[in-house]
Amino acid sequence: MKNNYDKPWILIAAYDLSAGNSSEGHIAYSILNKLLEKYRIIMVTRCNNKKELLENTDFTNKYSKVYLVGYDLPRWASWWKKGARFYRTYAYFWQMTWPFVVKKHLLLKRTIKLIHILNFHNDSIPSLAWILRRPVIWGPINHHEIVPPWRRTFWPKSTSIKHVLIFFLRRILWRIDFFLRIHIYKSDIILSAGKWVDNRLGLKKTSKIIHRSQLGFNPGIFHMPSKLRRLNQENKIELIIAGRLDWIKGIDLAIEALAQLPLYYCLKIIGKGPSEQKLRTLAARLGIKNRIVFQPPVSRNELSDIYANSDVFLFTSAEVAGLVWIEALACGLPVVAFDGNTEVAAAANYIPNINLALKGCNRKKQIQNLARAITKVSKKSQNSSTTRDALISHYSYGSLAAIILKAYDEVSKNVN
Image (cartoon, rainbow, N blue to C red; front, side):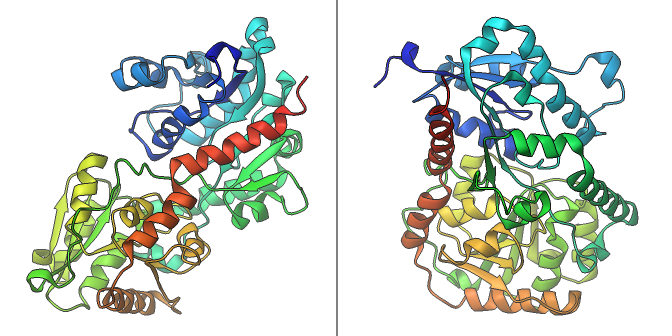
């Protein structure tokens, strides 16, 4: 193995980096060990991320050779930012300004061989990293498409309006943002999640694309149980949903589908979020609250054990690229999801045990199709070992890191 001092330096800009506080931060954290095998890393992230990581013994033990640089917008320029308020605006200016901080550090600038912009869900947010005159890799980039009206009938009106306005703003940025256009042009390699990203950014005509989403899982945490639970055990089939209870997750659709299923079907919902109270009210109104368990969030290790005692995982979210369905499949659970232009629907072509509910002409038909898909999957046998092999090949963090390293190696050939 190469001596650490013989490895080239790279700079990674990660707006979100954490040991598990968020999906994006967790993914960035999980691929670091593989990247460190070939490169030395300077990581630019926000100051609160740096502070939390340096206080985390897991990070200091595993990644002591990562050089962390904390950067935030000055207070006079970010007084309007509080919590999640104006998050996208802050992230935009953060990505646009951190390169000027690095540029002032001449030794740091001379040391790095390439730059990786690691901002998964923000393909409408550009960076000025190209001013550092180093090869630039961007991605994996992704976004959520607008949620169709039939899904938003359960949402508060204000949330629905806000969602439409934000997507309208992103559509404008995709089309007219000069800095986004030049960032695409200046990027040496773009890691694109799929054709929905290519279409929005006009990437079809460029040859510098590598297709890979940000999604992944850790095989060491999400593992197959020693003995798979048999469906209909104790005359009961347990459906499960896990994740933050946001409106986009479509958990209301799962509850309405449950009301159409026989009494021996039950549902466990793991998570907290703004939609919880309205979901509880919906369950009570449909007369099925005794068949639903709401459970607070748990650690990833605990989640793996819960999956081992469940029967079917429901992924009803409108997200183009949610993470939880991959982790459930890795634990031997069959997944039921809606068909559409999403990562999970595309993965159904090459990952076994993904079962898609057919598209319907309206909300009522969609829910009926979801109930039918659940019934169908609960009656057929699952080949879990084949599923796991396919998942490791396509979605392990090792496979994601391998794609990123391939991009690093490709652009490094042109560095003097």
